Length: 88
Image (cartoon, rainbow, N blue to C red; front, side, top):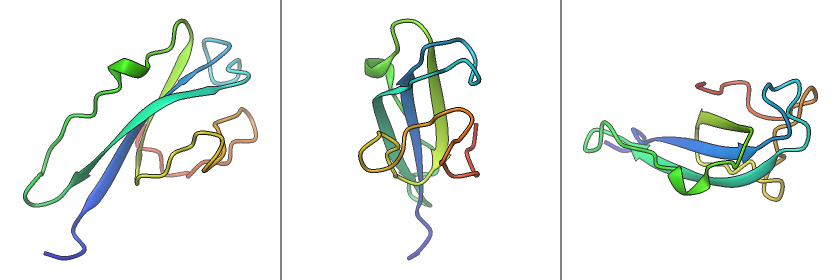
């Protein structure tokens, strides 16, 4: 069925602190994207190659945009310019 694909991405960032308010400068480490549909109703997103050394943030969100500081802005507290529909 056309138009029934749903892309989901998981992105990893290193941060300067343990909470979003203390995250400071974030650095994009990597991401993974899968497409869910009738033929592939579930999938695994593996970002184990992109783990932060200490503090970090992991975002799960719909779509395949990369918030890497080049294509789209990096997460930054409190003036975040990310989609307001993050899954978690």
